[in-house]
Amino acid sequence: MSELEVVRAGVRTTVQDLGRPGFAHLGVPRSGAADAGALRLANRLAGNPPGAAGLEILLGGARLRATRALTLAVTGAPCVVTVGGRPADPGLPLAVPAGALVTIGPVTAGLRVYLAAGGGIAVPPVLGSRSTDTLSGLGPDQVRDGDVLPIGPVTARPPGVDLAPYPPPAGELRLRVWLGPRADWFTPSALATLFTAAYRVSPETDRVGARLTGPALTRAIDGELPSEGLVLGAIQVPADGQPLIFLADHPTTGGYPVAGVVDPADIDLLGQARPGTVISFVAAA
Amino acid sequence: MRIRRAGPSAVLLEVADTAAVFAAYDLLTAARAEGTLRASEIVPAARTVLIDGVAEPDRIAALLETGRSAAPPSAAGSPPTIEIPVRYDGEDLDDVARLWDTDRAGVVAVHTGTEFRVAFCGFAPGFAYLTGLDPRHHVPRRASPRTRVPAGTVALAGPYSGVYPVASPGGWQCVGRTAAILFDLDRDPPALLSPGATVRFVEVQ
Image (cartoon, each protein chain N blue to C red):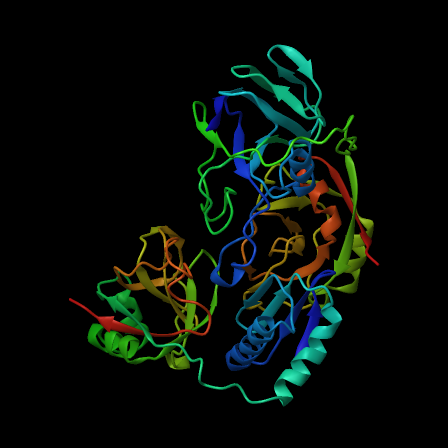
């Protein structure tokens, strides 16, 4: 079996696929790649099915070595990549010879680099997924220096693409929002604020949620909300009025009102939103 | 009943009480099993059922109407009662006894004498919110949460009883502990307690 040796893991590298939906009623979070589109693209370039497991490398800065020749693809946040000491292009299938060192430089924008290996990372699945869930602890441990990751059998040849272009992460995001399910728990002026004010991504942002700072959203209903199910992209407003947008590792239920839901098509942008990114909201549909 | 939209592909069904949550959850999971509803998640909670990953959320209302006017829910599928052995030696047992105006034995008698039902899961994989306690036995959370509650701790908060599947911080009143494994990845389903299951606690020394 082919293997990927982790020489340097970087600040926080995890194995991610498209998560484990279908178990929320048992309290199991969805998890999966924070920028699922980037993982899908990396898999396509590496000749994998879209849901194969790859590496999610927060802020880049990792070194890897393949025990056998394999195909790698790097997508997501922009960074300098080298294979065997030569510059290599993100967004292209990369033929990596046996023993060659692959370096992933620090990101120059965005947050997360995705690396797919032809055959996929073949750690044992947990409830149908190889994703590390940072909230519940399900799935493989965070990747550490010296880990040796098994690579599965190659199922298809990489596609003959020139270069898969994708836009770099922006410093300002306009996210489409569907009001509800609990918009009526907020004052009309709070909802007007949501659609006019600029928020910033806080440094406390992680795979559970993008925490925002900006004008507090005041409630029209003060009572306690019994816990209810949460969707990906839910904009939850805790007691301090500062919105939090739930991402891949979000809890399955929560007890603070959800003012609106970020359109699923815009979630990947949040998975790449660095602290300080300016966020504004526009009404969806 | 009220249907609230939760984004383009989910609805939050809000109902009157826990009994209505059970009825809606049974109806929706049956519709999914029959193929009349396609949804990636059906998540019951205290007063709501979230239906996520639906292609046509506007059809949920009609589905619920036809479902309710059709045959009443049968009891044929009711699962067996799950028994959980408990050693009642929790750190908050005396506090709960005081709140219930009884003694330790009185708390044990009420807790083992109650037929609980899993209203919903959340907080952690396999953590079940168990309903069934009489309102006079509802208790507040602890004033200050503990930083670590061991796995298997049996506890109370608000209208619920629950068992911590893994060690975690927690603010519930701890009354005992069990050796039962609440969440086991080698079991199908992995959670011992799924929504709708009936549960009894049995005292062990």
